[in-house]
Image (cartoon, rainbow, N blue to C red; front, side):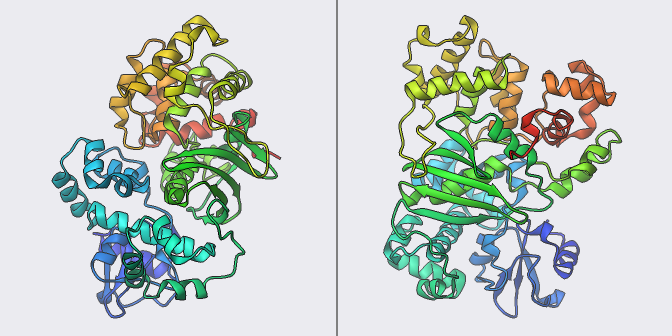
Length: 490
């Protein structure tokens, strides 16, 4: 969008928050960059230059605006609605791969040369993978500076910087303030100041945001010991690169209140990225709903409760296992099967608030389980053991970098995997915004009640007009039922 100067100027003049994260405005006369909704008086058009990323602004020598804080805007929806090289690279960078494995590790994950990835990201985002990762480290550093009392040296290494000097130089360059000045200006939140303490964060999103089906789905399918709904918040354990964590997520009118307890603060950017992905917070609901409203059948459903998101996952392999456990059984039965696996094979964790007891077992742990001990039908037992074996040996990879069509095809090639299982994994684990579930019982019931074709082939043909947002159409169709997944828990 940043190449459409006229459209960008209109967005800046109207202070339209829907475009926050889509592009950034760099002001030539002041040397700062802002989000489109910055509350200050808009500069003259001839003094505005538009960039596709904060990293590109920083590489061009601009510093972040102290008023609108563009580094805290929602992420671009582009990276969660595409499966090309750039989008997959951006999802991996957000998941901390460059900080942990370097650019060669990123290239190995994607199957391209480092030169090709550099060229592609520079062409589309105006910054290479190192600059994009640096911008993310700067955001993480600011978050830790403002929400904790940690010593600056600990903040530097927790944010992923190799040295305190690099940390100081980056913070001054990006924010035009020293780390100490950033902390002095920040409101006193009373956040924890020791590693492992609770961090209180605000996760922004684009409006409208309807929390009912997202939190309803997560609460209704919560696996005891791993997830729970407590006092208006969804809580769960997280398996992270450097340790484990516990997150609490509660909806509010203008943000998601997030509380994180981490065993290692280096996991903070990854935990935030996975929580945003879980709740689909980087979606563009205005674009999705406007498209679905063009269908006269869906329009009343969208108008009744706009802004529905797709509930996703924090662990793709975990969700694939749970999808197999949920084949042809009720939600309650699937939870029971999953809880048994968790109790027998999950790693125990300590929850300061009680209630959560385990991490969901890894594919490696499940691959070593004696199939005879699994209390489920023989065919589903064979499907589960085949899945976890392929996940454990790496012959099947599920992650934010997955190629959606290719991965779906590999899933369908596994014994016991039909269209419903592959499609629900594509929808919730892989994040495909166009995934569709024509064989799902709830979808077929909704189709029948709305006068849509109820056979899978005919319904798929009818849904062609909903592309590329069929995953969101699924949420509106599911919402016609009174199942608990559609309602915010009381």
